[in-house]
Image 1: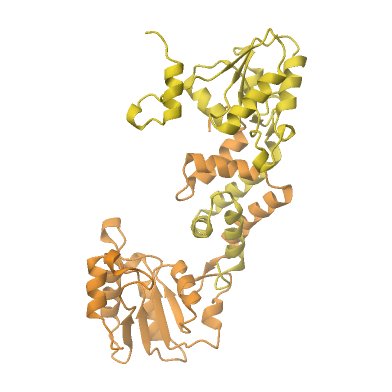
Image 2 (image 1 turned 180 degrees about the horizontal axis):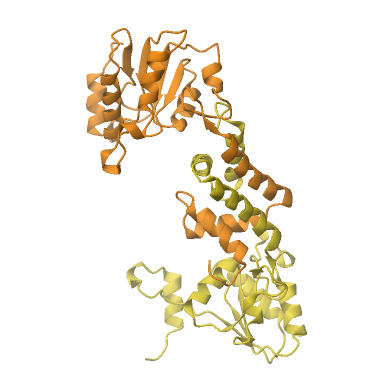
Amino acid sequence: MSNNTSIYLVKLTEFFERLPGIGKKTAQKLAFSVLKMSKESAHDFANAIINAHEKVRYCSQCYNFTDKEICDICTDNSRDKSIICVIEDTRDLEAIEKTHEFTGLYHVLHGVISPLNGIGPDEIRIKELLTRINNINNTKIKEIIMATNPTVEGEATSMYISKLIRDPEIKITRLAYGVPVGATLEYADEVTLSRALLGRNEI
Amino acid sequence: MSNNTSIYLVKLTEFFERLPGIGKKTAQKLAFSVLKMSKESAHDFANAIINAHEKVRYCSQCYNFTDKEICDICTDNSRDKSIICVIEDTRDLEAIEKTHEFTGLYHVLHGVISPLNGIGPDEIRIKELLTRINNINNTKIKEIIMATNPTVEGEATSMYISKLIRDPEIKITRLAYGVPVGATLEYADEVTLSRALLGRNEI
């Protein structure tokens, strides 16, 4: 936005523009929508930013976002603490929780090893996972489920981590590959299809 | 976002989700990006929202956004105050200013007449335009340029307004229709092309 308008509007637009995936036009639209909010909403929005920034932190055990020392999933006694599902991102946690199929704990890596982007093993929470497996107080870990994304980097990260876990008593598994439910074979890519063939099950 | 994370993060995500054009996934991404900001940036962002909301208002003359009583364009003495360009939205003002072709003043309608969406002539700044034309203190208005969008609603709004301005001394014009510069005729729609033909100029 140029200087034909209020400097306060320009500043707000700039802030929106700095957010990921927000271009100039969208930033403008968002800034205008803030002007149209009620005074209360605008203040609540501003407070939400400050509160989230101040109070949200990583769970010291699984690195999910939480406002406590240890997150609700890690402290939930109804969950199976002997299974850890390793994921790239908190959003993957949400996706898996929605299935209601998994009752173990998580470990959020916050990224994948990606040498091209300058992300080595030390940039993501791998060390913390290993420490966690070794130092666990009461429960012995029985299984680690590798649930990184089925991309080259996700695969490589899974492989890297599974090689570091040398405990023969810990089973290391990964999500099944196959054709997505509801999809048509015609449109499945060859790699997915060949994985689906290799992993075929008896019915 | 579910309750597997911090309530503060959920709240912030909800605020982003209420903004226009922001879906659930994007809201989540934006909320995460706020967490990654520096403390200073997060506070500046929150303040930008409050400041913009408190200080930005409509110019009492042209209804552009400003933080003064009358905006910088309206008070700029180098501009031709006898020409008013009527536009739908402040963003159109930015677009026209970028051309550096127009040195008159603006009038922002903040919408178009759209009975289907329940927007009648009283919902947009038409009355204010008429009052402005009649009450102008020093300068006599010579020309009103209708620069609403070339849509059915934009056209209808232009027609409606031009009929209300009964002063024979005021010339009412509108933007030329035609093929966009740099476009290929092949891909121009028939209406645009026929307008371009009708409006052809001698070279």
